[in-house]
Picture (cartoon, rainbow, N blue to C red):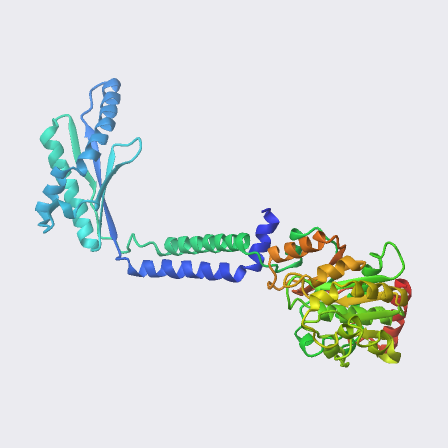
Length: 463
């Protein structure tokens, strides 16, 4: 993953990252509250050496004192000294009660020794520090020649007014940082193992096929899926006009073009794409035939409000003539529609028959563009078979997470296996962001006369 990929993951999963950070902060706060406050007190000792009469003697004396300091630091926490402190303070736990509570350090390049004691009681901490200093002096006097080396208290310990631990700001900062790191790690791990397609970029990383159209998420499409049921100058309608234009450039051989519209799995929006694309093609003046070849779950008739019992299945089985099965739709009947017909027990055999292949050839002799709404690719083989008969396949992919990378890859592989040409992708349900409107997305306040003029110019350029 590159830096931009990490930034994209953080942007997409920021809620989980923030939640993890807050959990880390809460855990750090809870840990801090459960900790017993500890207080520290410090006493300071001074090591002096009897100096000589000459500068050389003084220097040697200072060097000797600095070397002795290291030994005295070790003696401060020795069992002999700690036991003497426990006896003096009458501690019930003996010297074991002082283990880990007393520390001695030497200040660099000095003859000063710091004795630090830690205890939940600030007064007890001061008493332990002072007692340790006194007992260390006694121990040194017992082993050293006091006429040469002298250890004395420079500063006595005093009870602290504020606890040394827990360090609330530090604990909270660490908890927040660990929470953020855990959240980012979770987001990146989930991204690596999550195979769902959630954006156009995810789809582009899976297959290297051109994207002919992109459509954003719109909750109103459930009730009104046709572009004619909306403002015909809105963003969705213009997106279908752009898809119409891009599809025109895939017709490299010229002549009639048969396009199979399918998807990897059900529910990606292939039927609404096929129907609206056919409407836009008919709107441009082309002679278009829309065929519902999804014999298992036909929906074209329902979308357009047409009779669905007479259609493709009847034509293939020669129970009805093609001319009688085709219905007209739209102003002036500009769009010709062949619905699915009655349900059949063997749809795969019907669609893969030589009769269907001859029927496609007949469609191409009578119409400029044929849009075939086919079933999804993965559940059945019908669309792949139809794709091999047609000019190519238009694959609809939903970018809302319902489709997995493997499903899209398998769908493309199924088409390649039968030598079906993949014309391109239509990315559906893309999350709409600010500034995603195109130049053609006119606003409601635009006057109707201005709209018509712009639309007329747009159509003339497209043709």
